[in-house]
Image (cartoon, rainbow, N blue to C red; front, top):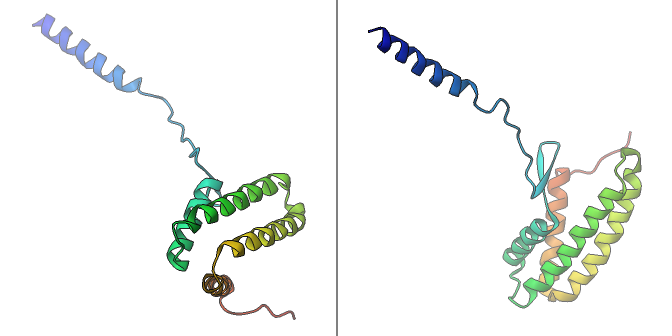
Length: 144
């Protein structure tokens, strides 16, 4: 009987110590494919280009010939935007960053216009206007 109690106690002790020695802390790893900022998950340039190409394919009815060209333009734009953001990390440099981003967007929009048909260019302009209204609720800010 003593042997049984001792064996049971040893078995219980070994089970509890094995649970107690489970990994002490589990570290949460941030995703390597994107960056988190203010609770939002930002895509890599490749993911962004793929997402926007798919969206434009659907909204503008891009042809199979246009899709890789549009993706390449969008990828270059996203990579440049990422480099500009890295170049201006401080909040007080935000205005300079926005100016450089604006110039980059204009450059890539011109390249995009060269790939799109006139009908697609009109649809894209309408999408931009719709997006702009959505950001600002269709209202303009009034200075007091």
